[in-house]
Length: 98
Image (cartoon, rainbow, N blue to C red; front, side, top):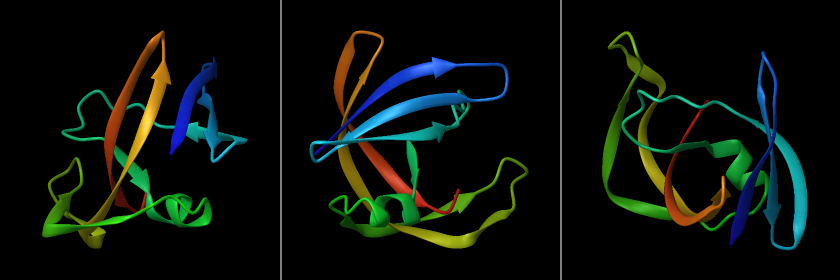
């Protein structure tokens, strides 16, 4: 289980601290208010040994311009606890290349 806490924001990026299995790491986040779901980079999830679940039906991932994402269909997700702005919630992240 991971807990993600927003740490700092500047003009170019948002830095968050992720507590993954008792270990805190710093990473960058892209906040896309127009996204239809929550996404996480597949390589990040694998590198940090997050538990992955296979989706029963793969999802075709489209880019903002309507083209199909180069990574093809989304086949896995991970469930993680998010702590941001005093809110704590369990979130499903679809895994794709970001």
